Image (cartoon, rainbow over the protein chains, first blue to last red):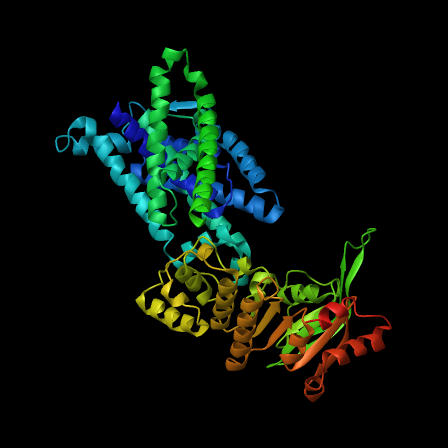
Length: 302
Length: 264
């Protein structure tokens, strides 16, 4: 049980890193995620079925996600479409594209195929107890991606992108086109989301067009749980680690809901309601914590 | 260096709210000029800055920089050689980032690549520059700018802008949102940097005595026109009373808030 929560949390954690970049760093609520997650899954599954090298298929999935992000950025930047709507447009179009990629089918299994994960399992079997192989693999992959994201936001380009989320005028005053920065941020974010989708498809054993439904809500809830873990930090390494931890905790809650929900007459269909309520509760808690902090400050100043 | 030729700006053209913000403006900004600009609200001062900075494009006329036509060049491209400070001290810096990160971002203009330039050498350089502000900021390089006062942030914006060596700087009432003491400090720093680095600059102010005290040239604006342009010795002889009389003489009506200005 605990391994599957951790593995799921880490796989979806890569997506949460992407959501963190758009929602928190760029300040761009990007809904493309609901389409780019199954896009990554579809590209990966089709790659496997075509007998491609697993890593190459993963790279293609990443590039597919990048392109999806670029499309949203182009719609937003050049047609002056509000950011939410631009994401919804791309997401809607991706639904059809994903079905096309899957060969006009809504669900394609890869359970009996040789995937990246089965490859890794066979290589590591014997070295590590079988039940922990995937866990170790995904700890390495998720932390590796987290470190790359940290590194990116420490470069001059990454710092400028963070500054834009803070203050767009400042970036313009530095002679940089904010549209370019938004495009780069959205591309990176959706690339990560697609990679997450690619791993999820292999883990679940299939790609499904409905895989992305409500993914953005899961991502956002994870980011918010993560933020609840630290009081305040602007250190990117801490924030990305919290995003991963938030994803694991979120999947723990979902796991409990899925397997023990029957106790309170809950069915898996109620999970979306739970996700939404979780976000609302988190918002209320964050608000009251802010108020408490302000009250304490006022007391101290007296 | 920068020339504005026959420029008019009209907002909401063709509607009932049509408003001519600038009327047939001609202005030649020479290298080394420090121009102060006064005028009542709605005179077109900020519109003039928006025009030079590229935030808006004129309906009629053209703008030239060192012989190049830049009328349609977007704001972010002009920002490579035009620096601007706003009245709101929060607009020049990123609140949720540290002082050193902010300085690194503004150190060089233009697109940044995947390189990590912030190292101990850069930090040492930033520290030595920050000392000039005499605000003790060199001890607080890792702190978030949210912790700093408006005056400190405006002084920092000014320093960062000067370090990027722009060919023209636009100061849009950059001390108006600060308390009197900080406003004084920032204004003195501004004057010091402009002299030291021989910067070509334009400054909008609501304070007539500041407009007279600083700079080598003064523009008075009213209803979208430059009604008075004085420089050199003629400017040195100006007083607040003479300026108000000049306004009466030119427009045959009182300066909108002359009592408020005189009480300064």
